Picture 1: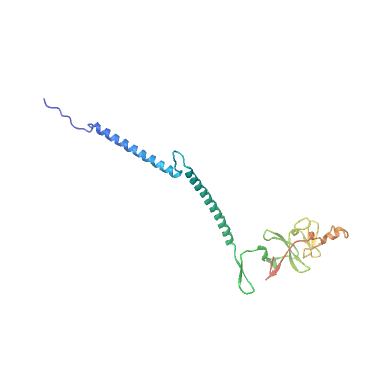
Picture 2: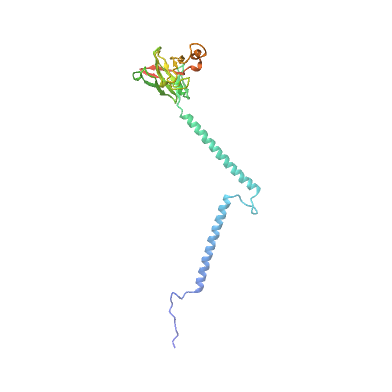
Length: 230
């Protein structure tokens, strides 16, 4: 009887080879997992002070605290430097203005005082000498009116010393003075009170016109090249 021979097929695989391959895969996975854990421990050791017997030593704690204090000091120094840089930047933004002294040398003054300079208000042709004109200069309310006695334009603070009513709501009286619309107090071109209609001809009220508290605050004015400046 002839001997029976079985044909080779893909299903005929050695089980020992399969077991060996499985063990190799498990070893590779364990090695990868161990490498990953070592990397995590290394990252944690960089973020925290090293441990001795599970706890950081006093020297290591002191070193860690010193590092934190140094970081805080550096942050504070950076804030101070930024503040100083901002102040220096503001000072550099101020324009330098040069003035020639008697020797002909230019003197630099870095501080600009706004109230020490003239500002054009209007051309004289556009001004009505019969009416008070309200305007604002450097956040200051003023009233402009024409003094017939001196033939000059005068600027007052736009408030009556009596009740602080706006003088610009008043008018020029028959004597050419600036008269308030509230109680009729009148002021001459120098700012002195010229008339109080309610005052008696004698007594304390008669002397009220000479009181410094009845003085209207005046601002300087000038005319240049047909323009009024204040």
